Image (cartoon, rainbow, N blue to C red; front, top):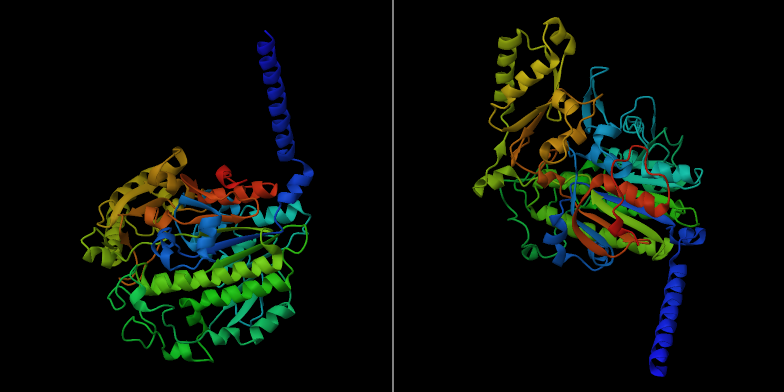
Length: 557
């Protein structure tokens, strides 16, 4: 009995001790105001790589250094099955969706350009004639985020901290800076090439460029990147891409073959043609230089109030469009971007402090293999015969309705109809939409067609119609939505493009790194609108007011 009593007492004491230890551990992990403050980063860095496919991470991985992409993959969290959940997959909607946590159906940016049904004119996603250019006499600075109808995570951070947080957005492309910066950015800067080669902005943000930006523009940095482009490594090591000389790639002016080194007069001329920098990896290097200077000069991440630096790398898109996703030029561009990222991370470590910032990296869309190349590999693919299709549609409209004027515009694979003419003809809108959709189905490159009536009256949960519906904005989108066959594009026979709801355009990388991020990876599907609420949850701020995504809980510590 004594022995038995001893074991009972020991067991009870053990349970008490275990409970005390668990309680102590829980006390250490309990969420307090002090804990929340301690886990907030001093700076959030959002990186969007224009036209980056997920497989650029894996295909070129062995060539990357340890301090760029590999640092994010091996020390951060990798969402391997990340997708855009809408179409069109293009730069304006992509950047907007990353930062608003929603899709064009809500935020209103339905393309880079689109036909505005109300004013019956084509509009640009960031264009705004009510503001003036700052830093140039050209019209390149007449921009604002006014066509984005909801807030961004950058807006919500500023609002949360009574505008004491600072947001700086940077990209070669104006839309790659204006849209991520949100409505409340302290500054958005983009690169005006042509014969100037300057970083500029809009009077939406300020009346004059800060002295540090003026000094950077006067430094000759842009001119220094107008140089011959050769491969970073021995080209024989680039076994992960196609041959250097092939029929699937475009040319710089003055070139006879799309081969390394690229050293045309336009590249080497020091006095003009600064736009050419954008189509080389040096555009990304220039962006990195400017971002590092902004980090220092704007004192980002230097106090306990979280700031935001939004950086978009645009040259990857220009290179992809010219040379295609299987080119040695694309491979070299990503190896050089890897070095630029390492430089940026080093500057963040030094200026803000390692472990004091949170960073995410994604893309605004991916891209298709060059269909001409796929066709030569006996893979179904091809190009839209726009001339033949336009002729067939015109004949159909005249025969069926007696007029071609029933169609107002065709853009972003959407047809806009004249509702007044349809009403005057005593036809129903749904009937006309269905008839024209049926006509489109007879065209060779077309895979499927949906109507606005279907978008209004159904709720799709998966597949292509789900993606189209997320991109369909009731006030701004068209009457008929056309989807091309997989592998088919409306583009030149050289270079790659994007814009479709197909998986090669939707599958992009998503990496999280830094303070508050749990290292790891997932194959579970994540979607682009999940980024903003994930960062918002980490910061403890309100979600952007149009959010439809959800926090990725596996990412957060």
